[in-house]
Image 1 (cartoon, rainbow, N blue to C red):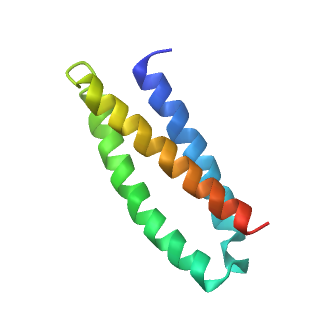
Image 2: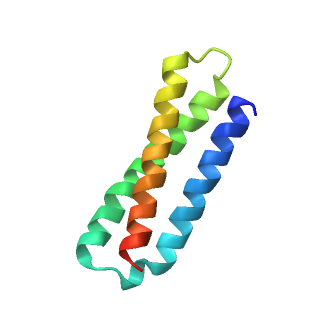
Length: 87
């Protein structure tokens, strides 16, 4: 699997968790809504950074790719946590 494919797959999984959480957000308590707002800002920053890393993949250092991957995994976990809180 190429680096671009890997990041695209991670991004799609995050998007899926994000979309599912958004549907249930209207039922959430205020503290979860605050957490959501913070996470949405991180999502925007992740998408910008991911676009940059994928675009520059040939020149990106191993460390930069690992950082982007870890950030994506963290976002995925946080969106999943919000989904679980709303169940």
